[in-house]
Structure formats: C-alpha cells, structure tokens
Image (cartoon, rainbow, N blue to C red):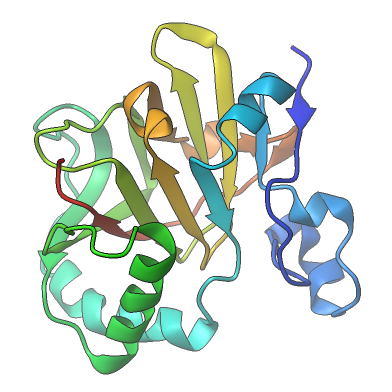
Length: 228
C-alpha cells in the first residue's frame, strides 16, 4: 500500500524524539524533515481533508510538567490493579480514574490544553479522564459514544511514545496513523471523532511509517467537551 506523508504542523526543533531518533534530537541542531512528520495516511487527499480535525503537538509539556502529573497521579494509580476486561471490551491491560482537582502546575497545563483544543466558551466535561496502559496493554479500535462526550477529545501522552490509528468506519482502506511522542498532545475533532475508529497499537504492532516505535507503560490525561 502506497503511503502518503504530509507534514501537518511545523513544530519546534527536536520535537519528535523517539528512541530511534534521540541522538539527532539531543544534538540540538536543525530537525530533519522526518522528525516533523507525525501523521501519515492512506492518501494525500484524506490527510488534507482531516487536517483541521487531527492534530499532534509534540513537546507540548516539559519533563518537569510530566513529573508534576506523575507525582499527582501515581499514588492513586498504584492502589489499582491493571484490568483486562473493559466494560465495552475496548481496552486491554489498563487502570483508569477521573480527577477534578489539580495542583497549580498541572492546572496550568490543563488550561493550556483547553485553550488550544476547544473553542472559547465550549462546555467541558468536568472530570479529567486518566487512562494508564500497561506495557502489554492496548486500546482496541472503537468510536466513543456520543452520549458521554462531544465533538472534541484532547489527550496528553505521558511516559511513552505510541502509535494511534484511525480507520474510516465504513471503509478500512482509508486510514491515518498518528505518531504520539512522549509528552505530546493529540486532538481529534468532528469527523475524525465520529466517522473513524481510533486505537492505540499493541507494542508488537507499534510501527509508524515503516519504523518501529517501542511502547512502554503509557498514561494519557484526557479532556473532552460535553455532547452538543
């Protein structure tokens, strides 16, 4: 299958630092083009048509901000066991929780997420969803129920790089792969939310544009707006 690669967003230097490319990022020099390619798809037309509905913003948070989230989340997560049977069979090897109150550092980051992902005045779902995937965990292809969340979902990616795959619900020949580097933010809106399934690939299937992306334990911090 021929793959078309389109750079959807110019990001700052060293933004995509996966394990394969960490040496080029660490030098601090100009990033090669491949380091700024975070979304690939089955056709140029599909990637362009979803350009405003699918975003990946690499290096959205700093190492210190990631550490602030982990300090707040780890004590509660450690009290939970990883589960392997989700109520709708969509997730394997996970722990999850919700959080309403945050310390100042995390709240500042979440306000930044809300400002870039959601329109001004958009009513947001109050609790922030926390999903902790074990190294062997994964999210199966699914479409979130419109009963529980609205047109936009935005997630911070902690601890690990990963690959998200979107596939057109009525045509599996139409797809996008998103490289989600550690400490990145992804945003899905509108048609990308309702007409495409999304999934996080298993470690053994975690390949982006022909290159292996090693999966470790991954925590996502997810904000949603309310159904319209």
